[in-house]
Length: 224
Image 1 (cartoon, rainbow, N blue to C red):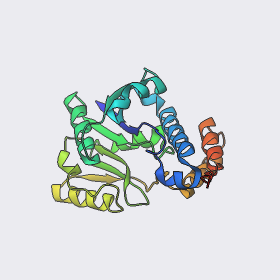
Image 2 (cartoon, rainbow, N blue to C red; image 1 turned 120 degrees about the vertical axis):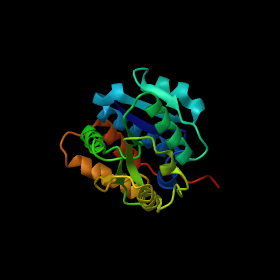
Image 3 (tube, one colour; image 1 turned 90 degrees about the vertical axis):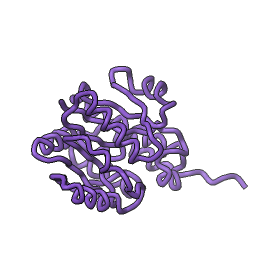
């Protein structure tokens, strides 16, 4: 059984997209985070029945359900660190009967259903599938068996997450498939790049238009 876990953070101004906020302000940055989440779900809608949204913080679960519609399955993220939360969520999925678990976030809204299918296909013959990002992290990780130690001792939010994870994979002797290099929408240039790439693909989602409009916003100076 396949299980897709989407890690998302409720888009509270000042608590999401803080790097973007330095240029466009906290409210606009949070609105972009909201649009990225909605666009991610729009694109993987065909996989909804095998998808669970993992919400942070846990107390935002009710607000997230109201925002995203009850048709999505939701569960709170549990754990102090990202590694603990990933271990707990993947363990829960395997306990519920999953045989292949793929995890993504909402900072890479270019991900399409086809990318998820490629990851699941790779798990038929590999223990781990991983999609690296240009900043040294990863936008996707998948497992074909429970491996909580894969998430232990990693320097999360650093540029060495991917390399540390691959080192752990080698230590554990896991069969691994690496996906194409991707990127997250963390900085203003990342967002502008995403909008430009979407424009070359023809029909553009209204949420991409929203992101483009928000990027034209400029943070107002504080009154003296």
